[in-house]
Image (cartoon, rainbow, N blue to C red; front, side, top):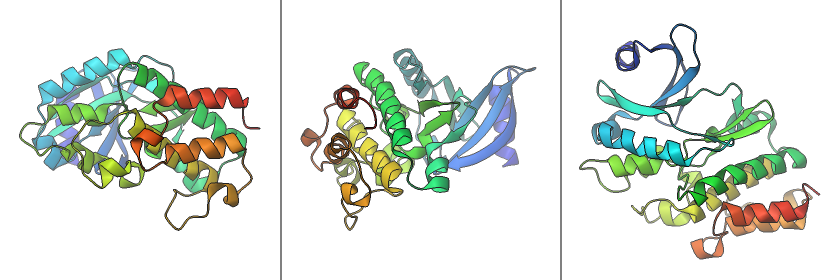
Length: 270
């Protein structure tokens, strides 16, 4: 840990000082750095070693700069920068004080209906902006959903595809295999190992898994009871989740804006 931390200090300094390491996400180690002497904090996310060796740092940083311009929305945490620290590639984003959807669901199990719908609506609003800018998230999972002072924010949108485009000599799909959680991957990405970039239908599948997890306390599984048998839910919400989870991409919502319109027409949680 000391060697990686020292390498990050050298790469980020003298503007930023690495303050602490926080809970990792998958195989990615996470640090918090603050601007010297007392400026805002950044999250520094370090890619796994094997993947780092295959990434062209210059190409990755250019891809993230393009993403930052496309993700200007209050519900999205846009990337800030990227670079190489020793043998590792890292990228940064603003630090958000709060918790994650993963921590909330782990602690509470199924969420109250009104809260689950509010999270779902805010996530769809952020994703609709990203999709309109031709950016698919590609790695939507509870660890990337941040909850802070009544706000719901989505982090790391487009990062997996940016890594994929920056790969130099690695097999297509290496970024997806190394960074994404299989539970939230659409069947065509998980089972076929498709090297194609993620698209809005992939995000819609992941959103369906997230919604099921919020409403039932666990992700869907082949042996799971139907969602509307687990708890009493409005019909529009059951239909929205079922359509998100359709096995074939063409049967899902085409993008987040289409699904968000359904939430709007419902008038809320009722």
